[in-house]
Image 1 (cartoon, rainbow, N blue to C red):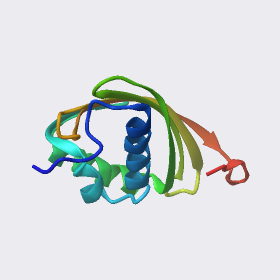
Image 2 (image 1 turned 180 degrees about the horizontal axis):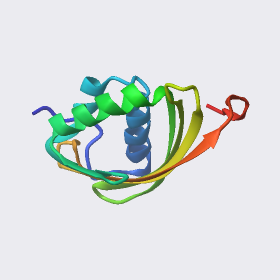
Image 3 (image 1 turned 60 degrees about the vertical axis):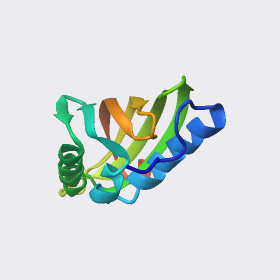
Image 4 (image 1 turned 180 degrees about the vertical axis):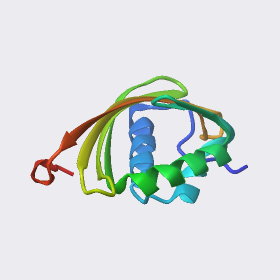
Length: 136
């Protein structure tokens, strides 16, 4: 596989670049594109869902964006080390009935030497909001 820059070890600048790249990719709501940032054997915990492998991540993202309509995400670098990054995030979306939500969370990421995410652990909470409360 090709390297996925920036690669570890991260600096403050390259960690911010990695976070921005993730935000930009997830905002495309394109499961195929997003899944390519993860290693073939990636491990995820997303809320109460545990999955393994890039294909499982792609399938998860497909179902996610079928449910979470008009999804818009913002990520913020919280901390980093050599090959790990911690982020906080919030995103807004609505369901098929038109109810809007703001989802808040934290993610812990671990990358391989080529810059692919090997582990993604996400804790997320949803808060119902009115359309007038939207910020993103």
